[in-house]
Amino acid sequence: MIRVTDDIILQDWELSESFTRSSGPGGQNVNKVSTAVELRFEAARSPALTGAVKARLKRIAGRKWTSDGALLIRVEDTRSQARNREIAEGRLAEMIRMALVAPKRRIKTKPTLGSKRRRMDAKTKRGQVKSLRGRVQED
Image (cartoon, rainbow, N blue to C red):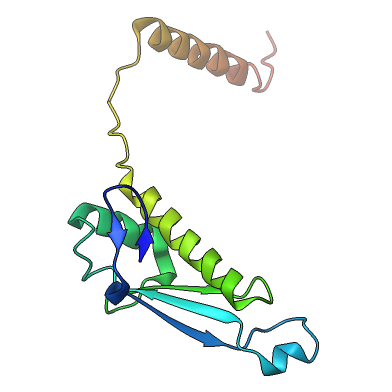
């Protein structure tokens, strides 16, 4: 059970963990102990999340989102299985917290009259500079 916020608690049936051997340095220990954690969260079937939150979570997750609607988080940062499990749970909770925040809608604004005039003046000046670059006519 993972507590994301006061309202959202992920139940044990929504989560599954598997452990594999980590890659990278670690000496002989890396060949014996399965310390890497792969946390699988069944996000599409989760009753704790609304449809909009699931859609934002899918966008945030990117390639970690599977075709059957699960979120896979793999952690092999430390040599401790328990610590890797804590890191994975923390990353999942953080992703869900990010998905809970609805993006602010953009409010369309119009350019002011002064900014339109400044833009047109700058264009006129630039055109005059370019027109003076031509060949010099002899009188």
